[in-house]
Image (cartoon, rainbow, N blue to C red; front, side, top):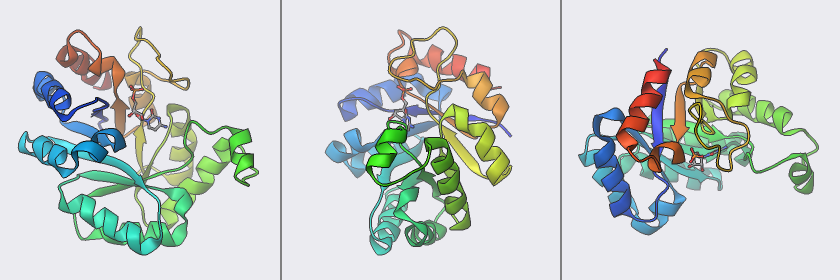
Length: 227
Ligand code: C5P
C-alpha cells in the first residue's frame, strides 16, 4: 500500500492557493480545502482544482441531523470532491446517512473522531468521561460499524486504529513534519516516512510545504520519503 500526500491549502485567498498549486505542479495530486477557503470562495475553488486535474479533499466536517448530513455529502460529491468528512460524534444514524450519501458516487467518506485540540478535561466538560485515546478508538469502531470507510487520526493513533479496525480501514493523518522542519503548533508529530511505515493511507501536510522557499521541492521531498 502506498501512502499519498495531501497538501492542506490553508491560505487566505483562492488566488494564493491556486498559485501554490501551480508552483507545486506534478509533485502533488491531492489538496485539502477547508472551511477557511470554502466559506469565502465556495465550489469555485474546487472547480479550479479539478480543472487542473487535482483531487480534492473537502474538509468541512459535517455534523448535523442525518438527513442534512446525507444531502451535504451528496452535495460535496456533486461539486467534485474526491474525499470529504463528517464528525463521528454525530452518532450511528448520522454516520449511516452520510455513508448513504457517499454511496452513489466515488467520494471517499472519512470521519473525524476527537479533535486534537481536546484533552481529557475538555472531554469531561462536554460530559464524556474517557481519555481522548479511548474515545478515538470508540468512535473509530462506531464509524466502521456504520459503513464509513475511514477516519482522520493523529500519527500516534495509527497503530491502535490499525489494530482495532484492520488493514482496509482508511487512515488520513495530519500533524506530519519532515525531519528538521519546524513543528509549528503541532505536538503529536511524525515524519512522512514513519507515518508511511505504520500504514497511513494519506498524510496531510500544510505549512512545511506552503511556507517552503520552494514548495515543489518540499512536496517532492515528502513524496520521496513516502516511497
Ligand atoms: O500546517 P500543518 O501541516 O500543521 O497543517 C495540517 C492540516 O491538517 C491543517 O489543515 C489542520 O487544520 C489539519 N488537521 C490537523 N490536526 C487534526 C486535524 C486536522 O492538523 N487533528
